[in-house]
Length: 417
Image (cartoon, rainbow, N blue to C red; front, side, top):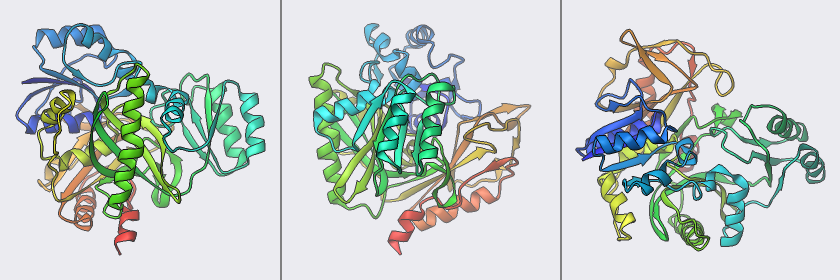
């Protein structure tokens, strides 16, 4: 069928690639000129009226929403009103990501394990609070901040700076509230699921790497790489996360009158007391999408249609591991350079995939156009082989004024050996 993917980044490229592999005709709005095989449509993610008109004109069978900006613009609400099939949460349900305070309120109601927290609407109160708390602690901009609104502060000075930035600058976008949480010790992991109302179909695990540089150093980013699944995460931990986090969350959202339908992302940390929620996203994670989708054997729309119909569906996954390395422009995550020519992609073998994000095409060349430029992935029977293949491929490319982490999946490899 004709399928529309809303978005322009690596996540949307991976979703569109999978749908193309499944045999569909794929449109991406606005897409990226380096998404081979897809039809890019020059419509912004938040131009709901134009998206509806396009879906009607092209007889789109399913629309899949990628970015949070489109969700918070109410695209799902309008599509549903027009009787157009779309997979994603309504604006009210998307507040799980759109407001950290709202998500905490839902978790409290659902008795979902998470960090202790307080919410503040002014800098002075927040600054007084952290003096009583001490460091380390976590400072979160309440609203959307493109994945960069979280500061893990290991000193009060870092926490003060983050709070001041949230209330007095546009570093994290327009913000009016801050959530301050206790710092949790443990290993982070991502668990996503297809959700419709109280029906949940979980995916395999993955682990993102948020810090900009090797050894988990540097500022928080939208993600510098990921791998899937996690070979060292016990099955009992996975089961506990599904039963204590995903199911209660879905049930509580129904009870609140804001049922969730779409890709649900739970960012978790395995503490001494078991898995706890760091955050929820109301869409597929990025770069987790780029490492989970290559392992998905089942047709993507089959899973979506099953969860919407509240049917049981046993997802088929490859018996393999996928690693994805993000290549970012120098200066990311603050002020990233752009305009650099990236070359050598034609030499890459079929052992790797490239999902484009912050790139464009000029005079036939791939050119940097943002912070995270692309994700290069490799899928192999072992994580070690996938890692070697991905990094070997990156070394064959010419990537001026860029950087990438050289230690993606290091936590898993330490556990394996």
